[in-house]
Length: 488
Image (cartoon, rainbow, N blue to C red; front, side, top):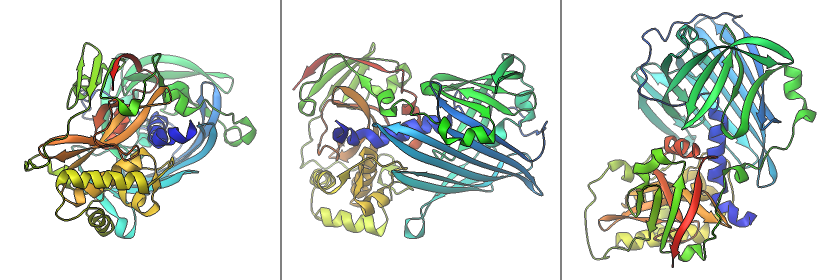
């Protein structure tokens, strides 16, 4: 079972990691207005502060967060290290996330660095403001890529959020939104927060007066308690996760760590009716609950979604002789920090796999077959990138999907990354695969299982980058699936 789970393991790990790390923020409700005075800063405690938080999962300690906030001559320095021991497929994966940010006097971001390191891989990025544009850099040398995000207002990071005067002065029932850049997923959101009102919380055996805030995180609610001066006391939300203020000695005490629940088991979605030969299914009908806000995305392409019932039918391949020029989004032919389709190494490999005169359908077939045969199927805890996967020749579904998209684009075939669920050993697990524009229509392909098009056991919930993955992560723990009908 573990060998087959590696097909989907890495993406599940990334989604869970995103949920774990982003519990510090909480994204939702983009229609809430940003207060005009949101950059007013009023700190109620010392300029140089260091706090420690235990990371608990269903009451078991699985890590800690070490945060420092330091006054400088030209603003603030925010540093944070999060250490976690995550149980994945029965094995504890030690994971460290570090970030350091230079903030302006009003707490807005000037520049920052972020690094994630684990037993399964690593990832790092840099970000800085250039006028009204946020630039994000990943990779080094020839693999260096810079993304640009035009910003309507100066972004914050979560480290500076709780120090905003406007937030702490919210009255019970009031909401406000704030622009946030999250280095863990390299995405921008508005964070909307509701002030519940005065409360109290027990920390280290002492009952402390607090203010209670609510955040709706990817369709779920999480709760935060802060002190009167804005210091974080506790936060709880997805998958039984809780952050709780502690002391340095208690945070780092190794004997206090416990083996948490298996994250893949938490993310897996069991079904009562097993699928018979899932890789041969041409039609699958299931009842889906807990994903109403995905209704529009579920109802497209080879899928229909009506009254909570999702029907998936394997799409027929188009006439290979039909030539339909692509007039869609040029981004699906372009290169970015994760799908480096214009990198010389990617271009060279792509032209070795396919022949110049191959039809688009044949190009995709060859690329999928190459990925299936040449890439080692193994979980990797990192942000999947095509170039890195090309060089290591290993990865899980996320790495496969990024590289397949890059190779296809490099030879002129538009490609996207799909995210959703795939049936493995009696459960649906989170998975990534591709869609390719071939002869006038989008056709699915999955290099992890060597399929083009893919079987009906692939349930697509979204297409896109890490912002979309974060949306899909919100399904963890609240999605149920009932098998209604299946056909080979």
